[in-house]
Every structure is written in C-alpha cells, then in structure tokens.
Amino acid sequence: MSYIEISSAPKQLSQEEVHDQFCEWMKTKLPCNAGRREFTRGRYMIRVATQETVPAIFDEFKRALAAREVTACLYIFNDYRFADGNSDTASAFKFLAEQMVGISRLPACALAHGAPLTNEVELLCPVTNQLTVFDDFECIAFCPQSNNLHDPLYDPLMATPFTAVNMSSDVYAFSRFVDDKARQSLGHPVHEESDIEKISKLFDTCVSSWHRLATSIIKNYEAITDTRKCPVHVTDDGQYWVAAHKDPAFAEQVKEPHKHELPELYARRITDEWLAWFRDGKAYNAGGLARDGVSL
Image (cartoon, rainbow, N blue to C red; front, side, top):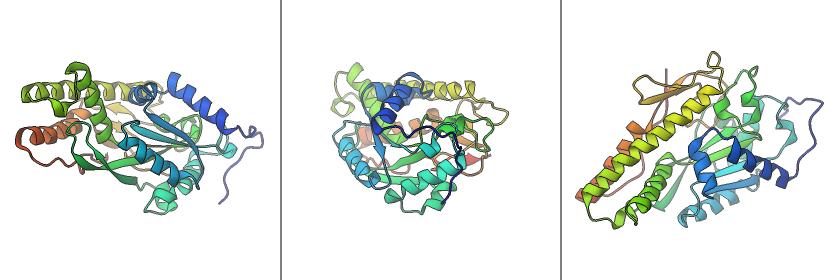
C-alpha cells in the first residue's frame, strides 16, 4: 500500500527518542487527565512496537494487568512517513490498522473503516476480588495528522505526537480508580470492608469524582478544537459527550457526530452490579457494562 509522503520528511528517530518524546508529551501536554493520572502513577505500559511485536506486547500487558502493575497500554509506531507534517490521517489510520491485525479478529480494512478492535481479558476485579472477563479492552488509533485543521479527518481528540494505538478498558480503569479511593479512605480494598453503607457511600463518591474527571477531559479537548469543523462537548443534561467519532471504533475514514455515555450513567451501572455482589452475593460479571456510542 502506498502512503502520501512529503519530500521534506524528517530523519527517522531512534526508538529511544520516540519513546522519550512521547513520555514527555504524556507528562506535560496530554489533555486527558485520566490518562495523565495513570502515567504519573507509573501504570501506563508504553512500548515502541512493530507489526511483529504487537502480539508479544499484548501478552506482556495481560501479565502486567494480572499483577496489578498497569491499567493501560500504548503501542507507539516509529515510522517517519507519518511524522507530524507528513501524510494524512486516513493513511496513518490504515497503516496503524495493518500493524494491529495480529491481535484482531477482523482484517485491517475493517479496522480502518470503523470496526472496533476489542479484546477480552480475564482478571480479578479490583473491587469485588472476583475473577471476571473484562470485554472492553479497546484499541484506538491516534496520529499527529489528526491535529491538522485542514485534514478531512481533523479531530484533536485523536491526536498524538507519533502514530500510536491506545489499549484500555473503561470498566477496568474505573475499577482501579475505586480501588485507589478505597485504600485512601478506608485503608483497605473494598472487598475487605464489611459495612455495606460505607461501601455504598464510597461508590457514590467515586461515581461523582469519575464523572467530574471525564467531564473535565471533554472540556479540555473542546478548548483546543475548532468545533465548527469537529464537534465536541458535554450535553446540556451532563450525561453524555458528543464527538465527531464513534467510541470504540479503532479508526474511521468519515467523521460523523456520535453521543457517548458519561460516568453518571455507565459508572453507576457498574456500581449497581458491585452492590448486587456485596449485598446479595450475585455473581459479578464485568462483561456488557460498557456501551458503544450512538450516531446522532
């Protein structure tokens, strides 16, 4: 496959240079507060990858998840053809889809045109301490070209300094957040607490905090986006966010607005399932708790 290139392409950076520059961006410029929180806590696995190494990195990520060492994984692809100022978003997304096929049940062409790249990971839930399958470990494509106002797929939410793919689970990330808060406020994990009222109050506090965090992230992106070309905002009722892409599509070749749930809805659904476990002993299943965005 051929890609659009610019004759003034920069020199190929070393893997170490790309890794270090990306980490500096994560530390100082990433608009996503939740991602920066995990990075500063040392819970973001960041690897410079190739098509050949993606499956091994995914296996490494799963082992680190099981050990509670990480929450998310970032695959960085060091290819000067897609450096900032080169190529275009459509080509970069097609390239990234090709790199990730080793952990996908779908072909690259489907990933580049709106299909999700989702994997299931069986883990102990940080809150209930029950073994369950998290079915929403989604891979999302990012590239520097997404920040180009003149690119047909302009969308700063999908912009990073180098081509990359992020892999994370909203359900698992919220679970780790609640576990953190429990250890801070209760002094121990939730599953060691016997007072159901304390647990319920903790969950309410965490939903509110996670919701405020998510809302602030959307507002951060709204502030750096030309919303005339790329809508992004929180709805008036405060329960949804709107963006020019569908979460959790791996990548898209057409920009269309979609509405997505904010934590006041999806995190509350998760805590309801946890409470059913703690109060009634109902088996906890993390599967099916995340919801796809809806086209407007």
